[in-house]
Length: 101
Image (cartoon, rainbow, N blue to C red; front, side, top):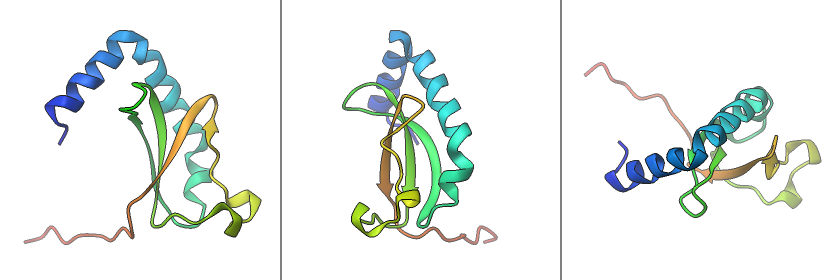
């Protein structure tokens, strides 16, 4: 659930020309999602508003962060995709939940 503070920040970003930024971030995510999801440790890809800058970015969710020195070059998640900043967020392993209760 989005907090009131986050909701206000999102609305402000969209008023400040952020709709174009959000569209660019969505397109970058869509264009690169298949390749990103094929990388080790990647659990998901999305977009979000960076609270520090007020700009939209692509977020890559990983089970655990791995130092770049331990990755092959083709496994490194880029810092920018199609001009959109990328952030890597460690979320731990993802497992299915039983919602049949």
